[in-house]
Amino acid sequence: MRLSEDKVRRIAERLHDELAEREMLEYREARGVRADIGRAARVKAIYDFIIADLQQEEAIDAEVERILDTYSRELKGTERDVLFRKHKEEVARKRGYVL
Image 1: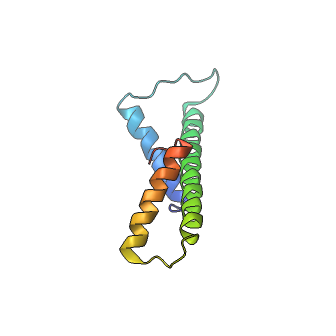
Image 2: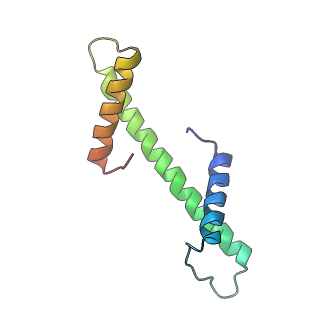
């Protein structure tokens, strides 16, 4: 994964706090739940979403690598980068994934 779990956790916390500060979050705490516990659950949900998204992109990258491995000649440098990007956009579009 491109980001460590700790970095993803910090991103999720910051995103939650920024959205809450700008009053862009709307939620209701369950009865009897302390506010810090509710925040932790919301941060965990954001964290899980980010991790799932990163895993989906990794799967797309792996599929693109398999496609590039089927080429009869070795791809190098800029040519490989251009083909990787082209195939990644195509695979992502087919999967309904927005890059």
